[in-house]
Image 1 (tube, helix red, strand yellow):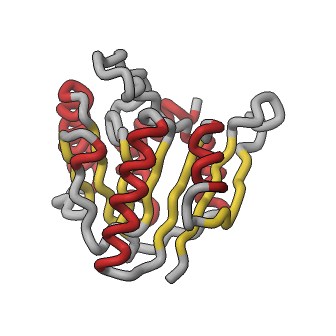
Image 2 (tube, one colour; image 1 turned 180 degrees about the vertical axis):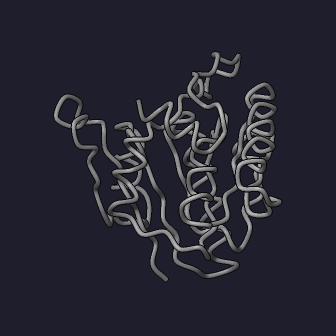
Image 3 (spheres, one colour; image 1 turned 45 degrees about the vertical axis):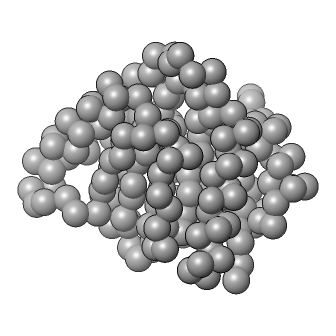
Length: 201
């Protein structure tokens, strides 16, 4: 029910899954359930000054949710052109809802590893959008950006894969800051959780 209610509230259409692509390291888009987003932001504080990057954003659900409720800046990175165009259409519909220009929600149509991380980007969201090899490359790019522009950075993993967890726990400088389970889902599936990894400066 919440899938419909939130989409209606935000005047967007995000309740569909993506189609498989021909690049084996990238996985089809699947939106984060709204109930999971509720659980995340009940325990994870997001400021309007934050800059969130959503890798594999699909149709933009997370982007509009964050902008509407927390006024933070969000960049959605999506390599699938069909999903990207649908996200732009959602952006137009969302703008009609809030009745003002949207200056803090952007979409980039490119591979995740080609996205140019800016000095303002400080929160990075992943819902298993690609293989561990690409994930490692992006984490390294984030670290290079932090070296050039020191800042606190969070990596937010939803439904985290064992490969991602092992890498973050054993091969990265990030440290687990918080685990947030999704009530009603986690009891049936222990993957229904968020892991927040933080890099302090």
